Length: 457
Image: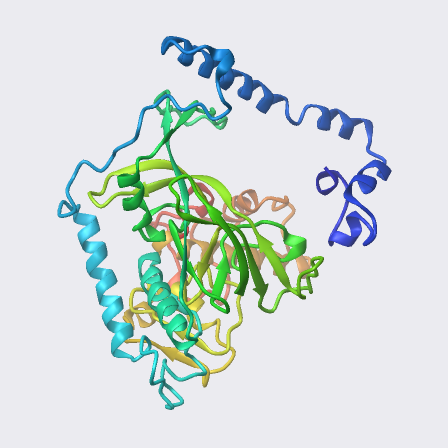
């Protein structure tokens, strides 16, 4: 509640170092409006929980079970078996995915990157010790999975360690009603029940790579001490437990799961270059505990069907590769990139601009130079975005020079651009506009404000 209502920039603004959260909460003077909001924070979810409990009781009665004897996690005995196809029955997309992953495997093997015994001494080689454990920037998550798997095995062999394999806890999620086709802003919470997954199906799920589910949560985590990892969720910003934070495995605490498998209870990660030092009691500096989370995820099966399950797992991944999207905001030296599959010049720029030096940059293989030399295209509304920025820049210049017409006024981007074009004419272009961005009266000037521009995740 303090993070919602008390102004803060760092954790020290919320409480003193020796102060407990309880005392900080009690000492803070909440306004009457804030207290009113806090009293009703959980109202909606309490109602939903009551509805779900009632639904479980009705279902139990229909099965002849006394509702008063229900356990919190009621299992109606229905077991989930989505894999009704043989191992040879692969969907078209899965076959293509496996071929793409094999190409990446061959590429990394041919460079010597997977060789655990004879690292190269060539200064510009990917298997040189300087570059060897650097995370490779790639385009697709399926290629990232290949690099992470090969890199994990190679790291364990080089350090003389045995990999420990930690498995997820999975349950089937079955919704009691079909999803609504309406596009209302208010999302209706759909009722769902969890069912136990049988051992055969669970074994199939554990074999899948993280890219086969929509949240990149691994079914199996293979770890050893010192292994480079990346945190995949936002846990605590003030403790540097954030999505994209890099580190190495310091240790773990493990236990047994429902199927007798080894599961992580706590993973201890030593943060690499955190924004601020983090000190937990009885732990070394910058070592943080990561506990499992439970998420509903969509898993793609080998026959291209998609099922929804509830997965409990520690949300980290080996850090021998990352996507260009995940690399944004990082400065890296050295920097290894594979831009062969980059979709446009923006993706190429993102990957290469992570480098702090040309000497520390390696491009893994060739790429399509037309992405750089082929001119500005309007894919994703990019050219239109540049046009609108040029108009806004011209408005700023006119205002600075006190030449802005009084009819052009406002705080919103869309209305300013509309007033500018209404005043100067539809064919008017700002001075010094690049020729690739020039438009005329015959060309439709479609604002990006009315488009849904989606980024790659």
